[in-house]
Length: 218
Image (cartoon, rainbow, N blue to C red; front, side, top):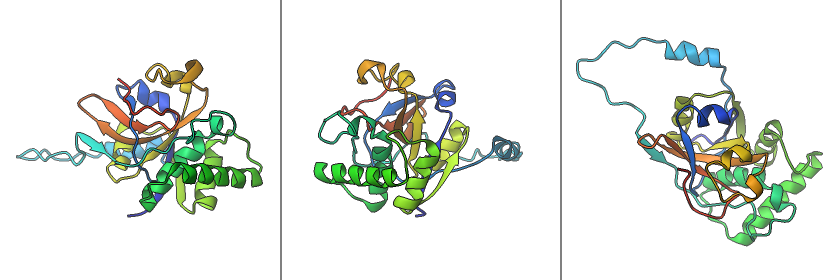
């Protein structure tokens, strides 16, 4: 399987287009995909003749990538740097998935600290942006990464069924509307990993590295 790191922007477009996010704790790949919306329109406008017998959809109604939960504060200590380690934990979620690792608390802690040391050497601050996360994925974790800009729901599902978890930078204040386990109304900047979807509930299933509770967004 090709190992990628996928990131995407415009989380709110997904939240308000009928699908919700629900956090579960699973393993992940890392990839970032870049596609232009005009290119996607060219694809969706293709006309396929109607078959005599309906052809089943290539996308299942439910899909879930199972993986270990990687918390950003592995010892439940929310002082720095753990308060702002969601980026590192999200990237490690994908890295451990590819390597089929189920690390203990001490290993997760050290791996987060090692990644922060690398980021500091690159003059990054405690909150790294999407481009910087891509650099970490490429230069530190040795993956190919792309950024998926303004994806459709189907775009995300297409990646998930290929067993590519998707790293998502998001506004935690918006996520707090669904996840009341956040403190102080949620952070302004947060990262999580999409691992699956459930069409019957119109929900995406996510691994939220910033909460210790294995629960779902309604």
